[in-house]
Image (cartoon, rainbow, N blue to C red; front, side):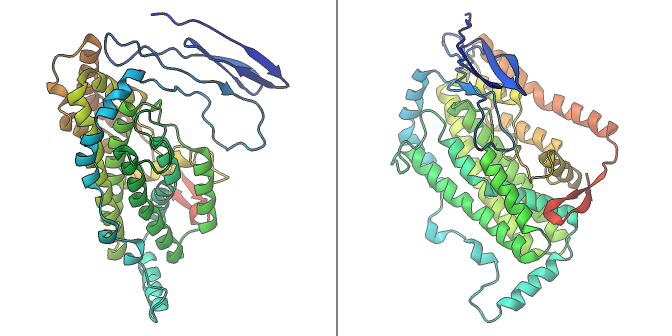
Length: 409
């Protein structure tokens, strides 16, 4: 299969608009025309004619531009005929996905864990919260703030789910099982950022304005999970990410307890339990896809892992630090909140949960994907061990979230 080059260029001052075909991608950067290889082979097994469609990319000057933009994106990589698979799963989703949602009347709410502003003892409750928060170190707050900001970018994650072909909410109030899940999942997740935000506000330990700026920047920039409007890729991504957030919130809960803040430990542990429940739902979807279309699903899994799972807040920015996400991640790694080892553990868990090693009857491409996935965890662990052996003590840098106090990376 060969792609072909089809170009139409319209030049303006310091701007180029290019229509992209399957083979090459043109773009501009600082007034320079860039060429990037953009053809991708179909990855749903032999016999499919899947090709990735790279849409029109513009670099025309805009009246508003987010500080971090993604200029190269693959669109609609799932063959149209695969959409029928997800339509046929509607009934399955109703009976296997929606039961993982909780009745609102039986759900916890942020106020269950916070001082009651209507009570006579509100000021004393806030004082107690602040006294407990004083015992928490600055580096812990950096990680807690980073986790909260990630949760607060929820509009982006709902948007991401609604980019997926075959499962998106077409109207904003669609009655399909997929759409009901997306809206209700979002509603449950919304409590996480609300709760952490209010806790941090009351703690008196952080610069809320800088945090609020970071949230606005992040939502404005979006995210690039490289899921290509493809629900195979999308649900593999969400399975991985829900487990990652379960691990991260679980570790902040453990460390809060170690520092003596049992209420904060309860907050983080409660959020972690939600993430675990959501992880179970998303992994069930992929499990079902492996039953229906093992070849296409295992190849999609390998594709996501080759691209590496990007964290949802990877475009994080506070108006000052261009490497804010990397620096936040370094602190999380050093504290053991979310580490390269956790990444490998999650991959190992999913490979085992989905029984990748025992899949049979795969195409040549499927067999290669299976072999790659089964050998990837040991490889990641070896690379991490070498990196840790070479790692030097990180420098101390200021974080705007904590009033520019310095924290070691």
